[in-house]
Image (cartoon, rainbow, N blue to C red; front, side, top):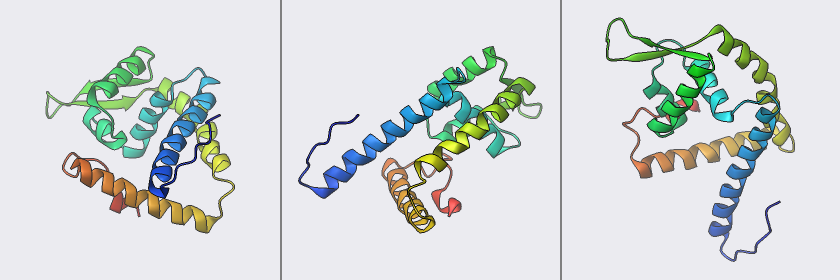
Length: 164
């Protein structure tokens, strides 16, 4: 349990709360996925492959998840060893790799989908639909501002405006 601290300045308190929330959400996800002996990051990559569809490259996954390329390579290596994904050379551009979910990966994804979708419903159950929509709008604004601050608009990160 995180210790309650009193911060005089509301902006600082909000900043600390956002960090605490992100850490707590990650711990909740780890708890859910640990029951299946599965890493949250592996599920995120599988979900990305399903969501992005088509010709998905490691770079697309890196950009979509907004993670470090080496980190995604590490996760993909683990997943390939487990037989969850395959890297396939692109026939048009031999330098390019595309990722595909294996039948084993698809089975794992389906197994994890229920618990993965239940968690946000449970954690956000105290909010009304109106509050969820307001929170969504606020989080998109903050995300867009962080992308602008980091100047990632040209790196292929999913456009926040397109998710409205």
